[in-house]
Image 1 (spheres, rainbow, N blue to C red):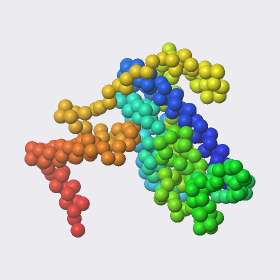
Image 2: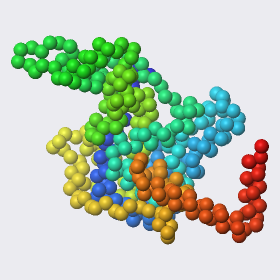
Image 3: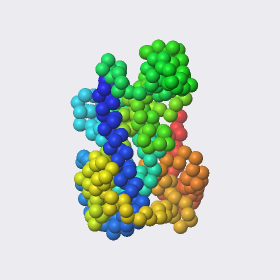
Image 4: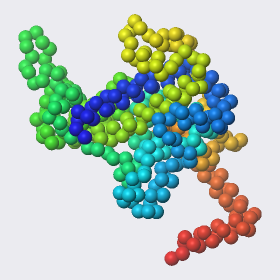
Length: 358
């Protein structure tokens, strides 16, 4: 993909992601409690209708549609004919399906996480969720190559804004950062540079900012190679729009619509179509949604199910302890079943002997 085409697509998707996040955050900080109550009152049929009308394409009906599609194609062998019917969307969003989302909690967890935390918090998990699709080449990671016409369309990290010209009298001399860029240009050949996107900054305005860096410095910066970053944006943009539409479906009495949202972001400062909406008072965040058992610990299955809908916690020791406790409970149940149920004991020993045979 030429850089010019890449720059245009990323710019459009980043603008959409930022707008949808700001709207979703504004809605949740004012109406999340109402949204939870109204979702709980909906029947499964009503929830399914809201989900299907809000999703941008046909929503899969069963859990883990990516694995189901993979096994379907694998039986016939991966070739051009068998992969022609593969739906790329099920590999980009394996957690988006009606079986999981019509439950009372998963949609609410997804709204809370994506609406209360900026998109950069989910860049890594969104990349990991597409791993199967990338491994079998259903999701194609297209390399970004230099385009002679792209000069001036990207801004290198710490780029020398003087473009190499000596400062005139009275101008401020080059900064140390610009001197660093000049050293990079002297040290690394043009072929040793590559395009990146800023994927982990704390500032939402800098999220998805295009940069050009020496490949050797990739690990020292909070960036992701442009070809991979584009996949993340392609995952996040429809997902954020989906969540905004769900909120609008659940809040028909709130003076807000997609047309008004679009007008808001295109209007000048003195014309705010959503001014009345933003004047509504903010409400305290509702308590965390939990699906624990009576003993206070989630089951291992429940923990695995809620991961795609929650905020990533890389060092969440409570979750680690909950996972360990869930496994211990499973082992205890297994041990008691082995002791009290002869048929269970026979099946367990048979399985063990089958797989442990030399």
